[in-house]
Amino acid sequence: MKEFLNTALYGASHSAIRQYTALAAQTPGCIGLTLGEPDFDTPTVVRDAAHASLENHETHYIANNGAYALREKIAAFEREKHGLDYAADEVIVTAGATGALFTALFGILNPGDEVIIPTPAFVLYAEIVKLCRGVPVFLDTSPDGFQIRAERLNACVTGKTKAILLNSPNNPTGCVLDSESLQAVRAAVEDKPIFVVCDDVYRQLVYTENYHSFAEFRELKKQILLVQSFSKPYAMTGWRVGYLMADAAIRERLELIHQFSVVSTPAPFQNACATALDCDVSNFLETYRKRRRYVLDRLAEIGLPVTLPEGAFYVFPSIAHFGLTSSEFCTRMIREGKLAATPGSCFGGEGHIRLSYCYSDEILAEGMDRLQRFVESLK
Image 1: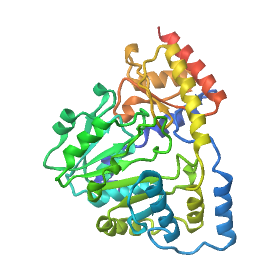
Image 2: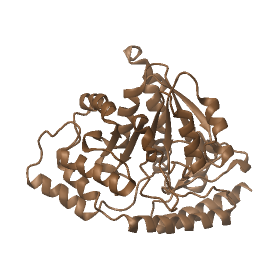
Image 3: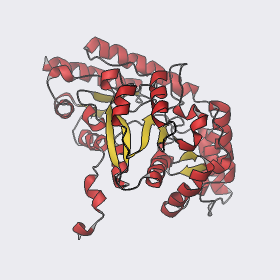
């Protein structure tokens, strides 16, 4: 019967991140630096708020777009912290950032519409676009230090372009889009029926003072779909809660997708997420900053070139000079070096590997030691 399934499923692939994580788990003695998951526990006050909601019997249906109090809190948070003028009714509380991305892309794409994805890029972007019957168009940013330059971007824009998908700070590189990149995108979409999907899930995990999101171009609000998540900044990956922000007229249509796919996010998590928005994540950020410095120093010692990551918790060093594909490098490193990383090819960044540094100091130290020994064995 499988030949009668939705044909879009045959163009989709399983996550390579999970595949290499699984391979590491199947290899005795192997440690992994593959997952982008904070090693911290969710803050106690957030867990306490969820517990209180359960004790208060807050286990019934809520509004499809999320509890109004949470949406109001999200709108106030984005206004006060980031200067974004969204109202509570322009917020949809989703099943993680993935739910927000699927809702946004399913809502704007017709069959054959193109979505420009600057690469390297998170693995699920292209897969969601294809499931939504769209066509991913890849913009290689590696020649420009993982920045977007107008000439290359404009060469990707066609009459079928429906959206540009931005992720800054970026997964897997950790790079933050500079002013020239943001202005290039602005010029490409101004006065055109092109959306910009801003995946800003790492916005609170930035190491530079000079960070700006494309969402700050408020004159383009009707074209902007902002995706956010509680997972990364608040160590809430397993809670699966995020949100999508869009101009009211757009939100009014997109909410139908969310309503008919998940109905609403869990009621007991609404107050917990509102509580999370009051949490100070500076201690998490400082820990990541120290780990970043350690990993960068070790990569320099090992001799693996890397572009400075200004956000998130990933490094994306080059391994091109070894003459191996990134898949070959990572597979051999698991088997011979007992260390797992994710091949750059999974992100459209062949010649690199992604290492996550949201692991304990002890695991990072052992991981870097194993990386060094493996690299030396290749020389």
